[in-house]
Image (cartoon, rainbow, N blue to C red; front, side):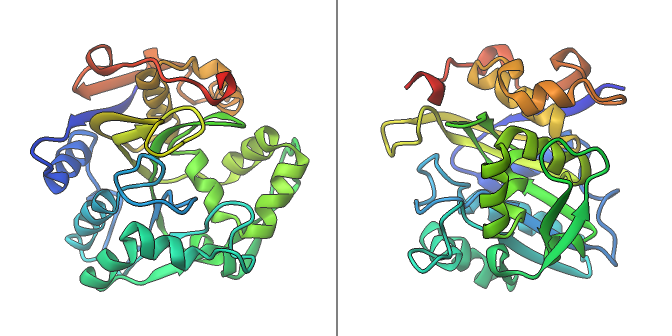
Length: 289
């Protein structure tokens, strides 16, 4: 079955309008979010940067997604993230990244709690056919939710070549579990994670993306786009195409497209809205820096 992914152009800095058009074009939230749903919105706030840098999810995109969710009156909504390996260890905490990015401010305006996943209780999840991790510890907030919406920024990655909707879920592991995954082999660990946990919907901040090693502002790429879709694998394939990356160079994507019932390539994705061809660029992979 073909999966739908929308590409919408940001116009006049109207983040709310762009996110609304992207989500509605890709099928919307209404069939997913009900009155009893516990919803987690998961941006990429993996490092200490400001919104608009291309290194983290712009708080204005997170705000737009959160407003759309709140309009459906679910039982609860939280914005949750656990910053990258080495954070929350006394040197830098997730709260500081929330504050610097502006995410704390938008959460406060909307009356939505922020959850810092590195210090959340951990729930063990068994991996049926492990490659690196036979059991993965995942933040309780994620495991007790009904809907997880991944809201990543579009970026290359120094270890796995691309980080978009799926890789954003790595932030749901408490900090020590992130370290373990890196030590055991990040690509195989990600495959294990995605075999048991994936987002229910994804909205990608591709307004300002990032190539190379995410130097700010040198590696920022102005695309002015929002992507959305219910299938995170399909969304990632479109994101790779926009960055000019071969998805087979992203090992977890290459492996997942071979799973039964999954999209096997971009040919299995119905792209609506803007065309990939019109907006595709050639990002510098971190591997080439």
